[in-house]
Image 1 (spheres, helix red, strand yellow):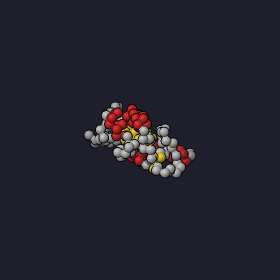
Image 2 (image 1 turned 180 degrees about the vertical axis):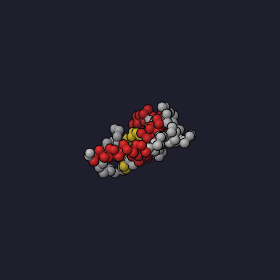
Image 3 (image 1 turned 120 degrees about the horizontal axis):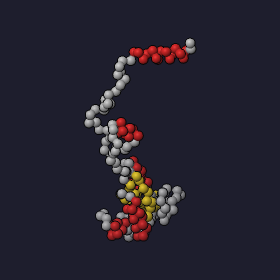
Image 4 (image 1 turned 90 degrees about the vertical axis):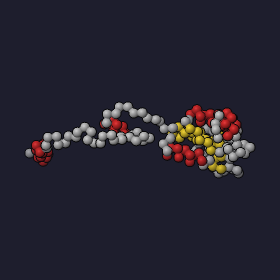
Length: 172
């Protein structure tokens, strides 16, 4: 006899002490009737899928996260870490006279991600009608929502409102 054999006999010997249906769970005992399994708007992950399948749900109507494009405009902007090409080079060097860092676009992109949206970086557009039209058209084609920052101060080069209203029929 070995020590392992004694342990095996003890485990097998305890089987006789189990009562009939002692460790059997009845169907539905883990959730009360009419329980909400997944809240509207909840992100569906592995735990939610397991719960739904366990409850016999094979299909679920879901929506994808909205695609939110963020576009900054202005000749004064120094765009940092832009994921899309722009007519202004991305840089981490100092500012030139009259420039400011594009703070709004990265902050808005982070905010959209925090709220569960698919944030799409549309980069920066300079204050030229053609540049604005190209970027706005790209945003409207690729995104469900377009957020713009800048270009509406009523200055001579603030063309965004005219482009949005005149070419795209927007209400500002």
